Length: 588
Image (cartoon, rainbow, N blue to C red; front, top):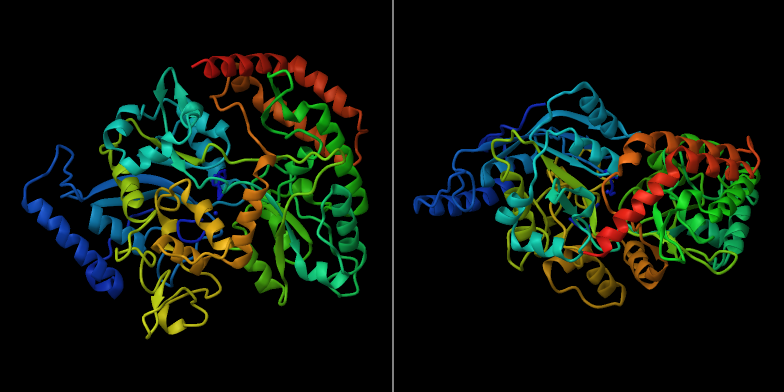
């Protein structure tokens, strides 16, 4: 959920039906759910017909599946939004069975880790530092530094020719929507990783507030930063949870790893002063400058220091990553959080479970003292990367796997196998009157073997490509249509209307109405030579100084000293290298 982004990350970062982050599976037909078996039999029949014609290429592919199943090895970081039926795991589940039976692709895991506190990234980096052999495929959401380390390991192939030959039309069209898509992973003209496409605007931020607290205290929606500070003050000092204790905070945020987070984000506050930390912004003179050392960041840090002093943010913010910070909101302690439109799907379900009667609502980000508003954007629409080992026996299999979801899942046709979801009894069920439900709590008999009925079991999350596949423009267009009261028509729209909560739909409309606040990261290239040598040191310098200022351990003017040291310790050279890259990329 980086990607992380997350990676995972992300992140998504993680979500419901593609809208929205050991041994293989050897299930036999006797153990397969009836609905899934029927779908498998149908698809297998089609494959047999194709195979009978003898159309098998040099890789063993007959146009529908591998005649003899092939294996792709990988590793996995499981997000906290992964839910399974009783008896199913990441290694043994309905998705694994379907892809092996219908495409002849058997995904096996060298290891699996629950991806909290950057566990997936840490384990990948340990593999790299120890020189351990990598699996056939690595999928990663999160910091580009880790992606670059994977590329620089020399274990992964140039996928350019592979993409050109095997990528399907739908995948290629999505990649071509943005000319910058390949820039981060291009080395000497070689494309070293496949992009995982995301929905446009899906990573953009908005403000979420505890609406029940707002109503109880008689508060109005914030338009300015001063308005929001007044709301936070009320959240802290007027006992909004009614327990008679002063145990609430204004906003959930965590900056253990970054001040530009995918959830519980605080970079928007810097945007209210005209910059964003952790990325390269365009200056008035057209050159690129690093937001973390921009003088505007000093103003944001002074504000954060005030928020810490007044109890608006948690004293533990410097110890929490995005997931840990979000728990401040979902456990009912914080009254606000800044994050993406899909948070109602996850993790806000935990808030409703933890705090009966809680309500939340999305709002536009408030404007800063001079009317400025700035927030990170998700463009280009990429939320992860897939690298293929040079020694993989069937490197083309990953593209065929991804193509399947673009062609069958991303925007299914009416009457097609996946028009209601992936598998009946998992992420959808049919009522006696023929209508479709996605409510396992209300209809437990239609969703057997659920371990947790407060969350829908969505096999699409189990895919090697995170959420199957996503067509970039589809989600925003659909959500805006639904927000404007138009009736859903296509299977994708119908599923969106069935799964997406009203607060989620309205949130996406807010994002689109406020899309002019997006601040693009203009550096989309690989790590420069000086970044490779100095990034860890320079990032540590910035983050430590930021935290000391916020916690009152250093005066605000320590920021100026840090900037001087950053420049002398490699920052000036990195700035030159970044601008050289930008000028070169812009001239092409």
